[in-house]
Length: 526
Image 1 (cartoon, rainbow, N blue to C red):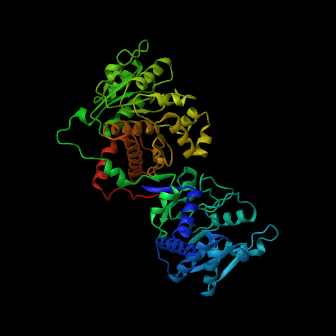
Image 2: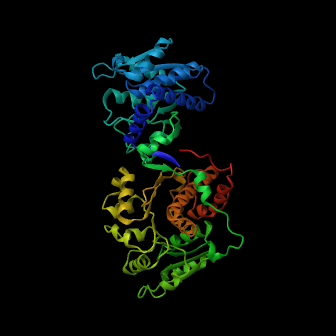
Image 3: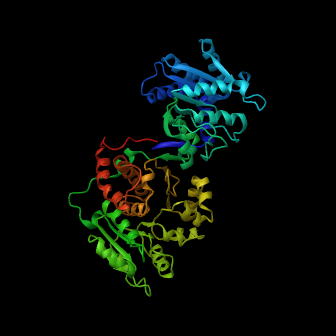
């Protein structure tokens, strides 16, 4: 997996490389700038020769990276214009070395002085004119150290960059984006691509941060990852090859119970589809037997629509009467989709938590039943995988969904601590966290997955994989697979108009392609 670092961890990484390992900062800057220039060259379809490139530099080290990029692109034949947003006297250290090197080689730097008094005469109009003609705009204004809101004339410069018709490439992080939260600090560059130096930053992997960063490319700084053991990391990105290794071939003598028997406790009046979709997801992900336990009002619809599943009606007056028999020989349980919040539903959920020793997927209504009482889940007999969206996560923590979204990593860590469960916080850039401290971020998926029942299918996939994998591995593999199915379908039909059942039906083909290392799958990207 690919490590993801916080702002403080990345600072510590750089400091240890420079002070502890004697790698000069100017070398790190050179490697960063050269790597970014390599990415820039790949982004321009017609090549660098004669391409019009505008590099906008700040006075700090991010600007120093920009001067290196400008030098390399100039050397490769691009028509480069460099603008410095600030006073040249404020460019110091390694950034100063690269500023002066660019000038000494014959380059020109136009100074834009973003002062309240006289921004126009400071060169903003020249910058806007150059931006209007640029094939590529390189944003080197602010890096990961930014911790204040951008407003006033500097915001005007960012707005001008965002209006540029050419492709926008940010260095390390879009200027104006908080490196930890992924929230914009006032004005923020809206990049098409971001070249991340050394390691990914947390803010790039949040839903909001991802919208500003565009496609993310990681640039090697020439420093081995042995330093990571000293500075740590927040999370890791799920990689396709890691998921493929989890998808082991079946034994020749496999039978339906050996590959996985799943009980799905789901569905109610008007919500039989939730049970059906979870069961379909489980079947399509490899379960050999799937049984649905539901309420009588949903039973007829389930029997009529899915002959492969065994469906059993629960009696609301005595919902536990046959539950223990249903749990017998089941390797995993999925509970909650469309199941209800009434007393009978709560009794079923409580019995499974207290009595079943196998792994359980706790989804939807089974999560909402624990509103304000997340610690109750820590007393479950078997291992749990919780699959909340931000709203359900908020119910567990007593927070609004918006508060969860502002600090997704913090919310996940808190729920893991309270429940001792593997937690899957769904959404763009789904997070999977384990009680042992492992945290993984998924980068597959797209807006096509924003369809009713998509989460029910995911719950079923997790349930099936729990029959053959450990809980964290099953959750990681399932969210990656679920997102990859969305990517495959998007390439075929676009980003809307797909039924959740179609997601489930695509799962076997994508699993097979993953396990075979099929190059026909969509390109893996951050």
